[in-house]
Image 1: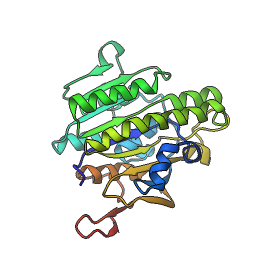
Image 2: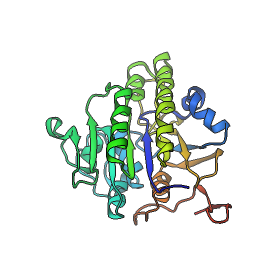
Image 3: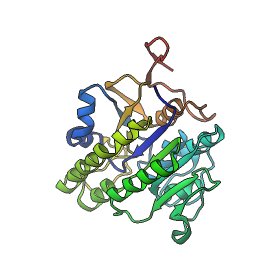
Image 4: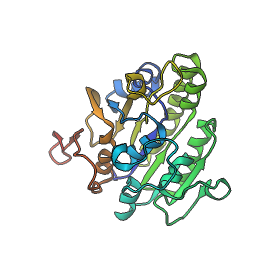
Length: 282
């Protein structure tokens, strides 16, 4: 049974089609009915900072106001970190420094804010990096340390190397595809640790990547990303319908067993009735 603890992993710039073709471990779990897979359409603009805020607050850019990567300020919305803390749960993140700027302090001071432990901020324990080429392997090592030493109820993890290689070599490159395979290999090592500790896990992305080596537009390459859900509360399988990125935050609230914010849209992803064992939609 779920312990109402959640790890949310957002792989920056992971396209849906490349995830389907190059993530062998993840699709081994799909084939063996251990995980649910959805296709998600991101909000616009398909840029990182606006979509970090969208994923973590369940609100669109026109509402939350983070309309571009150049908007550097604390969030004015109620994030998953805020909701978890107000429900008595502990929070942590191993993530890019823009996440710290959204929820802990802005602007980011690298000498003071890279490691934030036992804080009263929405993210109580954070290890933040500030170079796009910071190795994903190191990032997952940071996350493992937080998982082991701090045992958070909600842990957010955000690797950047897929995005970095996409910008350097484009989404049509060997480098981009190989980087997706590399993060799949890291997940093969990390996810069993999470599951053994009783966590539900969400794996998704903020936006995609184009053959021009960029993102931000309205194409499928820009916007369509995967959503994998590891939870006894969600029926395994491949779901064909494309779902809104605004569904991720209320899904996270459901898995954490906490109330949604007033600005989140209704939750529509199929879940299980844990008492009767039936499928239903909330």
